[in-house]
Amino acid sequence: MNVNLKKPMNVNVNISAREGKNSLEQRRSWLGRVYKMQNAKITPEMRSRMKARAERSKRIVKNARRGNKLALHSKIAQRAWQDGYCNILKTREEKGNNRKKKMAQVAQVEVARMNKIQALIEDEEDEMDMARYDDISKEEAKNAVSVQEENSILKDLEKEPKDDEEVKAKFQLYETFLATVEAIRKETFDFWKEAKKEFVGNSKEDIERRLKAIDRFDNMGIDFESRVWFVYTMTRKATKNRSEITQVLKHINQKLSLLAEQIECPVCLETLSGDKSSLSGILKEANLEKYHTKLMEAKYTDKVLIEGLSLQGAEETKFWKEVRAHTGFKPGHLVRLKRALLNAKKATAPKQVQILVCCHKVCSECYANLRDFRGAPHILCPLCRTEDFLGVLLQEYRGLSRSRLP
Image 1 (tube, rainbow, N blue to C red):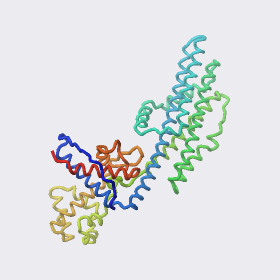
Image 2: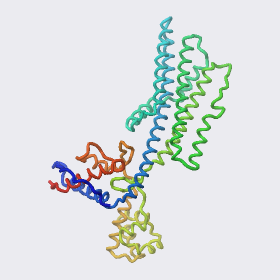
Image 3: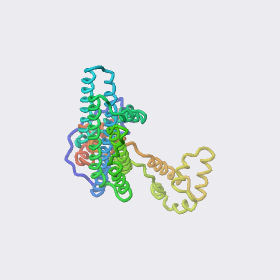
Image 4: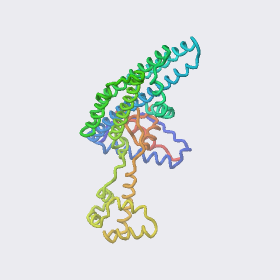
């Protein structure tokens, strides 16, 4: 397909001598390969299919981010409630009226903190970028509450406080925590309404079953025990439900991560997943298709032949001698076969991937080259802004083609 583009403006491409000859040649090679691929080999139908696959991947990534945000805020809410409870306990050391005043102040601060977390949970417009999410996750992991600490707090709640101010403070904190758990539950079910469009069959039914279990009778109902303070029973139930919801979120997010695979880089068209080449494809590249039957009869699969590349010394000599004996390969045939096998071996390794702002993925090699484009203020996605991308690609290709090696 030839793309009709307006005559590009003159671009003065200044290549620093420090980049060196090899760097410039590599960039030229990449530009030439990508330009020809984009301009000649991609039909409108191919680009449409690529875009449809990438759009699904983009949608799944956005859902996964929402699920990760919910799971993270759920853990932060648990941490905040327990920190707040510990801070209330510290005010016991105060004496007289100052103790009551201090406890009321601490309770007010901790309730406000929990309300802020609840607001974040309910804010659907809060698009947390991945770097910020990772930073918060690492910090949250450092402050994770141990089961022992949680049990210690619940143990303290078994006995109703004698001080009215302490009763009020602990109950207020519980009420706010419960409201936060309810918000997490609601957002989880709303999140699933969007995410379930990507699921079918058993995986969808499994998640539906897990979500229904959250609302089962023994989770929603509370059996009060006369020997303990009722706030203990309700708090234990709330913490248990929060934990179950978080586990369901984690399960959904794991499934979404498996679905979010974008097959190819939309720039160079190479696979991102590292799909293995078939023997027929390898032989076609080497122009040795007529030897397919002989290789299969001798059980020389693509995997066996690729593993043969790793042999050394006498083992290597013996292996390829046997291949020639079974197939009748000439020395030149073997050279072509090994070259095609090396290409296939490279294709089996997953590429490093970069995610653009639009959530589409490109391989790291293309990302590094796109980042250096002089004709664009930021990286242009070839799927979202096809014509702009092709225009800048053409400018860069012609500009670099005119530059001289240092």
